[in-house]
Figure 1 (tube, rainbow over the protein chains, first blue to last red):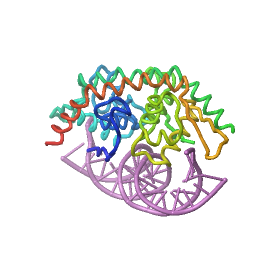
Figure 2: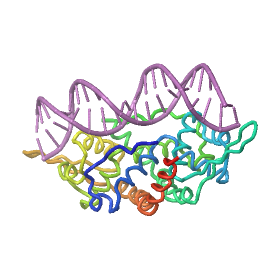
Figure 3: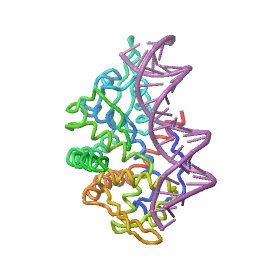
Length: 131
Length: 131
DNA sequence: CAGTATCCGATCAGATACTG
DNA sequence: CAGTATCTGATCGGATACTG
C-alpha cells in the first residue's frame, strides 16, 4: 500500500546501530505523517477499541479520506485490527493490537519531549528568524 | 523556514495529554522527514561535532541540497549550532546542542522499537498484501 | 569546501461529491 | 454508517549545474 521508496547506501551500524535502517526509515516515515500518531493515541484513549465514527470525532480535523487511509495502513502494519459487523447500518470496529500498544511507549517519549522542550525550540526559532 | 501548516481543531487533552498538540505535530513532522534523524544521529556518532563534508560522508545517499536544508532546520530549532571559520578553504562545523542531545533519547526509543518489532510489522504487511 | 539555484516528477493531503 | 472516487494546490526530495 505505502511504497517505502528506495533508499540505498545507508550504513546501518554507522548510522543508527540498527540492523535495518530501512525499518527505522519506514517507521519514522509513518510516525511522521500527519495523522497516524493521533489516530493510535486516540484509539488508545478510547479504550483500545472504537468504531470509525468515534475516531472521526476524536481526531478533530481529520477527513474521512485520511482516517480511512491511516487506518488501512495501521491495519496493514498489524498495529490495529479491523472487525466488520454484518449489520444495517454497518458497524466497523478498530482495535489496537499488542504490537500497536507497544509502539505507544516510545511514542509517548517523543510527546513528553515536546511538552518539555518545545517552548525552547520556539524561542530558538524566533531568535533565528529575527536575523 | 518550514511552515507548520495550519492545523486547527485538535483537542489537546483528549488527543495526547499535551498542552500543545501543535508542538507534537511539528516535532513528529520534523522527525518524520527523510534525513533529520539520520543527520542528528550521525552528528552524535561523530562525537557531537563535525563539518559539512564529514556529515555528507556519514549519511550515505544524502545530497548537498538536503544536508544543507536539514542542517538549517536543525539550527533554526536550536538542536545544532553552526560555526563558520573564516579560512580558505572555508570550514564550517556543526555541533549538537544540549537540547539536541536530549532529543536523542526518545528517538533511540523509536529506533529500538523498530529493531525489536519490525520483523513482525513486515510479516503483518505480507499477510495483508497476500489477500 | 560548503554551499545555492533551478528544474522536475512524485507524493501528500484538503475539499467535495458520491455509494453499498 | 463507513467508506470510495476524483480533482487540485502544495510540498518533498532527487538530479544537475553553478559559486564565493
